[in-house]
Structure formats: structure tokens, C-alpha cells
Length: 322
Image (cartoon, rainbow, N blue to C red; front, side, top):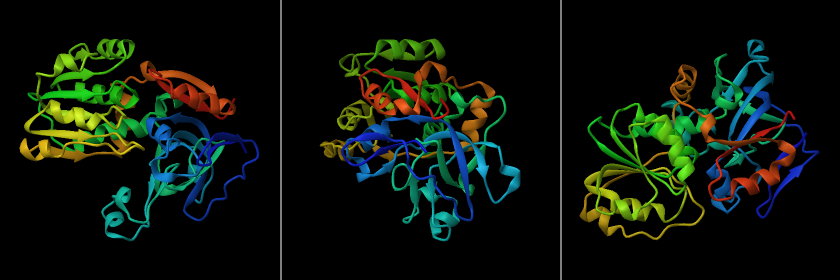
């Protein structure tokens, strides 16, 4: 089968990668769409020292499974597979299992391929009225929703979202439903204007210096840049909350004294709940088309990564079926 791999130095297409063989409890899925996200870009920059098939955002159809009722079902998959018996797994939190594997990130081949083997327990059925182009956003939308799991954001809060990329766009739409006083800081006018068209009540800014005298109750850092955290601290009011979403290959240098002096709550947040993400997509409350740059064949995956690495690029989706 065709698969897009990273060998530690280069992203390349393998036209004869072995078809994965499933074990008991696993399913073989024919991938219909796979998304390139900022984490993938950080992986090829050295994050997690990963080697193998790339990708963790996908939608596809089940071709082989222990459960016959799953055959031909259209599914998405949570990215963490735990050991199944540790305290984290017993609490249904495999994302913190010390023995977990993570699709295309840690110890498990990803989904930028014609086929992928997925753990059956990670699967979620895609509603009929949700297209594959929408469904491929389930994982990052769930990550956006995880913010509301980790922190209570009040309608009266002043909230700053730093980052106008794919994740920032989803976070903006999710928090737009809360009704808080929402400001989005980004670097790309066309992206900011697209978000403003979706959420007319938000304030958009392309200038960090214009916000230097503003302090926010909640700051959400989703810039995808190592220096984002240091800047985010300066926007957070004393005893405010800072939610960190970016994972980067280069470790940031930050002044931790300001977190202590201003008694800032620093909260890490990554994977989130798939079921409510699918419900939001099904309801039409979250729009994804404005976040898409292009849908390209998997065979053009190397060029797609180069495009995704360009400043201002939106989501690029790979299609292994064309």
C-alpha cells in the first residue's frame, strides 16, 4: 500500500509499504481522509523523535473487524491506545497511560496511508450528515473542547486566543458558543477575517503590541511557536489562567518568575472528547470549510507537507483514494 513516512530526516512516500495486519481487538480501516496538523509539522522538526507512518487525524471505513456489524462503518478514532489495566486506563483516561501508544506520534504507525490498523475501543461512528471532510476535524475539535473540560470559562470572562491557525479557529468557534468577551490574536488577516465572519461578536487583532496594556482573565496559547508561552504570560492578569495547547520541538526559554509573582494558573491541555465533537459537527454549530486550504492525493503528500509548512497555510487534507 501507499504510505507517507518520516525517517528522522525526510518525509517520503513509500509505494509498497506492508499492509498492516490486525490483532484481536483491532480493526483494519481504509482511510478516506487524513489531516496534516501542526503536531505533524513539529514531528518532522524533531518532536517526540518519532519514526514511521505519519498522521493522527483521520476518517475511514472498516474493512476487517472482530465485530461483523462494524464492517463498512465510517469511523474516526481517538489517538491514544492504553494498556487497558493501569489506573489511568481503568479511569478511561488512556491518554495518560505510561504504556500508551499514540497514532503517528508514539510507538504506533499513523493514518497517512491507504490503510491503518486501529484499536476497536478507540472508534467512534460518524453521523451520516457529517461529511468526511468535516469528520477529519474530529480530533482537533475534541482538543479544542478539552479546554472547557480543564477550566470553567464564564460568559463574563475576558478571554484571549493566541493563534489563528487550524486549532485556533476551532477554539474560537467553541468558545464563541460560551458568550465570553473573546479576542483572537493572529498573524494573518485573511484567517482573522474568516473567523470574524463566523463569530461576529469576537474582536480580532493582528498586532500583539496593540494588546500590551490589556490583561485577560483567560489566555489560550495556540500559536504553535516556542515563544508563544512567554508572550502569553504577559497577557494574563494576576491570578488569571493560561491554557497551553502548543506542543513544539524547540523548548522555550521563559521567565517562570512572572507565573509565581502574578500567581497565574498554568494549565496544560491536549486530547479531548470525541462524542461532543461529533455532535457539534452534526449540529452544524462548528464550520470547518473555512479552515481548509486544499484536499490533495496521498501521492502528493510530500508536496502537501511543504505547503503546510508555509506561513499562513490552512488545513491540508490528504485523500488516499485518488
